[in-house]
Length: 497
Image (cartoon, rainbow, N blue to C red):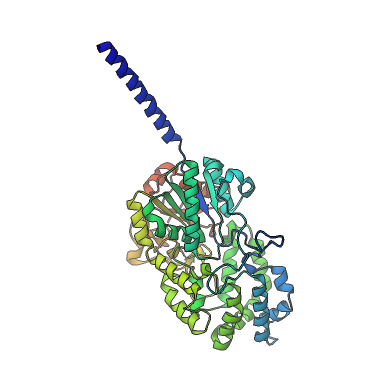
């Protein structure tokens, strides 16, 4: 009897050991699928989708050749560069408005795509079946995708393509459909979501709507538009052009843009446009300071171009939203009874819940991290030109609230003290939404990460779960502290004082 029991026990024990080792091996080899969510303008939009007339809409509605040759637009616009000729603003605005409307990039008054419009590459399968998308990708989202595919295999990487003009909350709902498909196909309970630029706003909306389902292991935000951008203050009539500032911006871009690779171009622009930029600034300021011209520009030009696209409205900084809505409503640019207003006001509330949503998902076990680039002055079109930005999105917004010195300045007093202060005294991450899980990279413009560089590899390592999202874990594994700088080859080193 003892021998029989011993045999039974041995068989059971062996079974348990085999089962356990198999489970351990399975857990060790299981890869969490990554879904990359691109930014504004990174996917093509088409008219007459699915018909013989299917044709691509020009990116952003800007076909430079058509714009410069169409119906005398250039002849009138070039007058803005001179003080010798009187500009016929009525004619210029009408011609521009007619052109932009003809591109069909704008949405309907309710913020929906026009009839027959859409994307043609809504992929639900992995990038193993879309090698043409990433195999030669050397910059931005494609470079990140390529780096991730090589890190964990293309079969584990997906791309969420979407109509970037539309409400980010609607796109988050569509993203949920892809997440469900990926979980089922990969036989996993959770995925990793990586949001780049506007894709960060889509992730924020996803988190807001589906956080209780706990189906995301990691949220990684890359220079996200989660809290807006200050250049959108144009909609609250904060419009300011200055020749000296514009020239300084061009000079700055000689070294700031893509590691200085385009310095010759910016030098040429600065040399050729020096005097003309002064005239242009004067004429643009005339438009901005003359209510009739200003309102005409908004309603005849901007409204017919992108005025009904929810995504642009959803890039308004949270604290500027009410003022922008008030001003745009007062001139008839925005209808508060429209579906467009309902969409953008709903997302505004999502922005307000961002901190509490992150706190919730972290409590449920999700990891959340943010990568923020810095070291570039703002776009010289508003009073906020001296904000510290990544070339487009302000550092304070991308980080969810970091305390940031003006461009070219340093923090002072109590803001310049503490363990979260950058060695160059530019940023204090203590007030950010994730002080222990946010990294700042100096000298990289917005999403311009290049394939094969240490900077792009760092993003891939975070996305693919190669390290925990904490300052301590990253420093231990890679030697990287919270504040990094990139050289012209995007080699990373720790910022020093």
